[in-house]
Amino acid sequence: MRTTTLLALGAAIVVAACSDDQSSSPTSPRTSNRSAAPASAVSASSGPSANGKPVDQVGFTKITKVVGPELEIPNANHSGTSTATCPVGTTLVGGGHIFTHFSAGASPPWISTSADDSKNGWLIYVYNYEINAGQFAIEAIAYCAS
Image 1: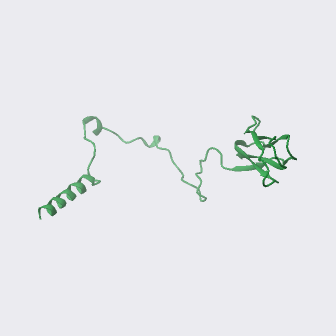
Image 2: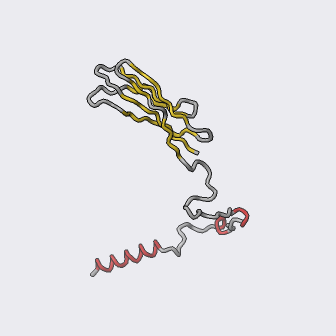
Image 3: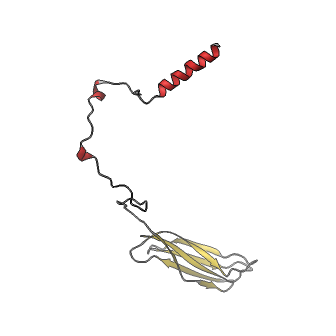
């Protein structure tokens, strides 16, 4: 019986401590003189539009994938570059590459460079100098934001 009473008393204390009516900080003369922010300091927000985007959206809203020209590397001892350039009015935000026409069982080519070309595009430089290297093609990919 004593355990049940202690549990009930403990639960009552927890409920009282967690109630929303009570202030969790002590009051002092400094904190009691606070005034609400003037109406001019509160900015009006029109909320999201019907499609869920904020109406005051700032920044990029669209990502476009641009694929560069396909570069054929015929066999061993060949190298080359493919570049995908973002259209005017967009900004490069990332990039990569796609291998195509790769021969199964052949030694994979080396990617020497996969980076921003400093001209709003993505550059891929590959070389195929491995023994047993086969034919393949590669395309650079640029992700452009507007």
